[in-house]
Length: 394
Image (tube, rainbow, N blue to C red; front, side, top):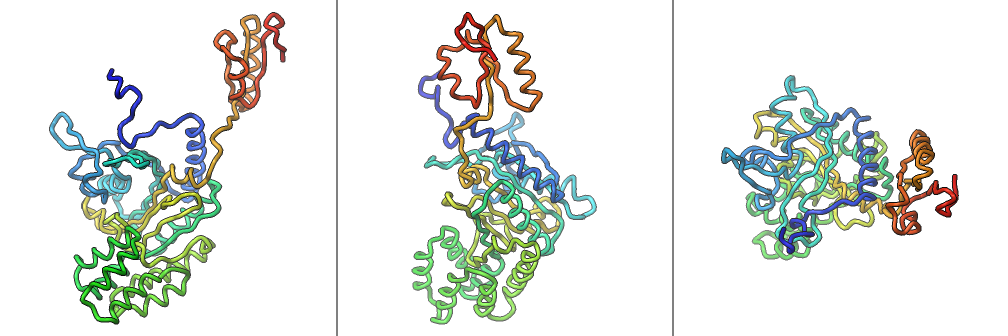
């Protein structure tokens, strides 16, 4: 074994220590209870997928894919997201009668990093996919479920930003004329480089009215009044369907009574190229980036031979735990510390505690060098040492 790599991990990989694992497990169980309560059933897909199917269908950049060859020479990828694998399964096995399908998942995904910079190359996502329903009602359900799930984890201060990729595309095409030019503007939005956006607009050969429209576009953030302002930027009917869908969505979210957690951001775009309609991101205190995102992707299943609508969301579990700001130092475990002459009694005490639902560590005194230091890691210690060890008995 090379000493250089003895304690190192591949770039972007992380170890999860026991206390963090316990917190993650509790959080996932709360999420699972909520998702199942809304009728979503869990699924597992392989860690490895074919590059020419899931790899190409995924919206993750090619340079971020982990690739390897199998024994037959086929190129495989470690799954970079869960949406594409679930689309594969749904199209091939589950969508037999084209009735709406509700799927949930909890899985690790893999995205290669050229340089670490604190960014993980492997992280866990918990999410859902609602497949086969093209109505705005499905979008509203997914957003309301995300709010409900986050609240069940104990998160209080968070906000969903909602946009519509169709509105952005139609508005930009109206003004700059081509998808290529529109994509340049979208790149500035994705990077949230609004200074660069404004500077680029100044350099475009556009009328002063069109430049003003793009400047006003950047301010389209807020409540339902934002949607009314958005209509005034459009010429003709192009883009109006997207805004009408957002109005319908807002009405449903008020009925779900989750509108206090929602705001509109019509400048919202995503690096996920398969989004076709309503999309959203969720932000929370203590975290400088979105802890989850989602949206409608009606074209993705076409790559697997199915023409149907779909929407869903994914939560980054590591970012969610950061937002929850949980205490990782404590433990609820108890310990029964015993000597050989009190072994049987110690075993019975530990058994009774476990029957009461308490986590118990049994530890022979022979295996402990510093009793005080060892005992500090437990919430309670039961000493079964006998008089010849100088301890007290319980």
